[in-house]
Every structure is written in structure tokens, then in C-alpha cells.
Length: 401
Image (cartoon, rainbow, N blue to C red; front, side):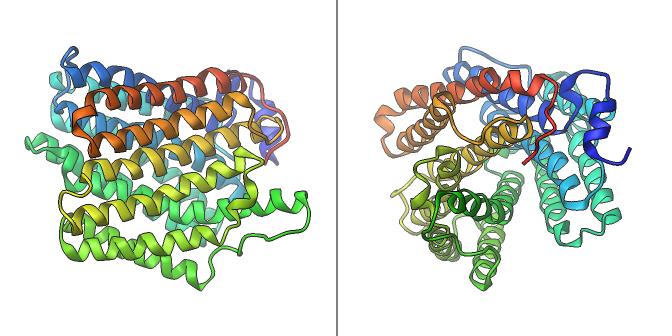
């Protein structure tokens, strides 16, 4: 085999195993909707899962280390071959990797009947195998600049492992260091990888539109400064989540990343929601940092859990949905434009995030706002599975982005 296209054409099994984004994006979309369908009755006390995690910790874990790990896997299995010039993982090895992810979801859901160590090993099996495979490709392809991506994946795995340890000790893992390490790793992924693709995709689209302002090229000195300050803020947040120093650093990081986003000419992309949504998703990173800073520095002003959801549902949720829709369209030979259905998915998710944030500001209306948030989330990801599932399940086109 001399190319990815030849390798995929030689595969005679299910089309969904021809590229990493196919099973993992579809699985992530379905699981995001199913997990929320389970969470809503769990929140009201009408459903109890046989999991050893408390309900809130299960909910947090299955979004951060269940859904997001699947999206990260789909993205990296698709992007790394482009970065390294090496062949992607396809066929039954890809199916086995996806099977490990499914095993993790089942193990966590049924963890009441299993030893904690067995649950942790089952859940960590896929990300560890992914890290080993990605690391091998980066080293053999001498793609040293992307070792930072492997490091961030490693921190996500570390956070998951610590989350399991905290839960096994009977601690409230939903507010533990494991979750903060994992969420911090995801925010750095968005800042680093998003900091490459958002201005790049924006520039490509704007050049075709004609003369006008273009994004500042990525990874200038200002970008490096913004990333270093964010990293420092996240490290301190992991250790001292409610310390005033943490609030000051988050305030500074939020301001820098808001300014960074403003350099990417997002205002010129409103005519194409497939591009504009990338800017909106990135905006939730500084918004979340500023909201957390406000909650730390002025106690009672903003609930920390509500502010944290601007990162979890807004930055992570919307950015992954934006990447999944764009990558699926591009890698299946479709026009890179958002139709009405895709725009509805984005709107539903943004509405869900805003409703969840509002629930933390107005406790009297929280029960209604939780239902609105849950419904919007389910609509967004069930809609993704329905609209994009047919593209992910059919034989691939040669065209790639």
C-alpha cells in the first residue's frame, strides 16, 4: 500500500472502519445523546444506574472521559496520518480500538458489580492504546512538533486515572483534581489545535470570498504568550481551584484569549456558519475563564459549576461538534457548507449551554432550565447522529480536506 486511499479501497469490510473519524464520531454523537437521556431521569431521581460513581460524577465522567475521548480519538486517528505522511489505522484494528472504548462505557455504567481496578483498566484501555499508536506514528514520522498533542492526551489519561482513584476512595470525583486535570487538558487542546485550525480554515474561506481582512497567522509571539498564561492558570486551578491567585490568572488568560480570537477575523465569517461556529466555540474558552475568575474573586457572583459548564458544554461541546460536522463533510466528499439541519444542531447546543449557565445564576428556575439544557443537548447530538450517520456509514469518497 502506498497511500491512504489505496489502503481504504483495499478494505472489504464495513465502510465505518475505513477511517478513524467514522466509528468514533458516530459513537461519540450517539453516546452524548444517550448519556444525557440517562442523566435527566437520574437528576430527578427516577433512574438509578448500577454504577459505583455518584450520579453527578458519572455524568461528568461520561462527558469528559467518555464522549470527549472518543472525539479526540476520531480527530487524531484522522489528522496524524496527514501530519506524519504515514498510513492510518483502518479495518479490524480500528474496530478493536472502538470496541475498547465501548468496553469502557459498559464497565463504568456497571461498575457497582466490578472491582474498581478492573473498571479503571477497562476504561483506560482505549486511550492508552490510542496514545501508544499515536506516539509511534509521531516518532516514526519524525513529526516532533506534534509531541505536544501527545502530551495533552497523556494529561487527559492521567486525569481519567485520578478520577477513578478518587471515586474508588469515596470522594466526590466531580469536583476533584482528576476532573480538573482532564478538563484543563481539553482546554489546552482547544487552545493549541483550535489555534491552528480556526485561523487556517477562516483564511482559506475568506481568500475565496475576495479582498478583505484576513486572520493573523497562528503561533505568533502573542499566541505563545496566551498559551503559556493559560497553561499557568490551568495548573494553578488544578491545585488551588478557589484561590484568588487562580482567579487573577484565569482573568488574565481569558482576556488574552479573547484578544487572540479577535485577531482571526471571525466577524467576516457570518455568511458561512460552518466557519463562524469555530469562532463561537473558541469564544467559550475565554468566556469560561472569565466566568470562573469572577466566581473565585467575587464569591456568589457566578456559581463555579455553572461557569465550568461554559468550558465543558460550550468550548469542548461546541468545538467538537463543529469539528465533527466539518471533518465528516470534508472527508466524505460533501460541500464544505452548513445546511439548515447543521445550523439547527449548532443552535440547539448553544441554547443548551446558555440554559445550563443560566440555571447556576437563577436557582429558582433551575429545574426548568436543566430540562431545557438537556433537551437542547440531546437534540444537538441525536441530530448529528441522524444527519451525519448516513455519511459516516457509507463508502468513502476519495476527496479529503
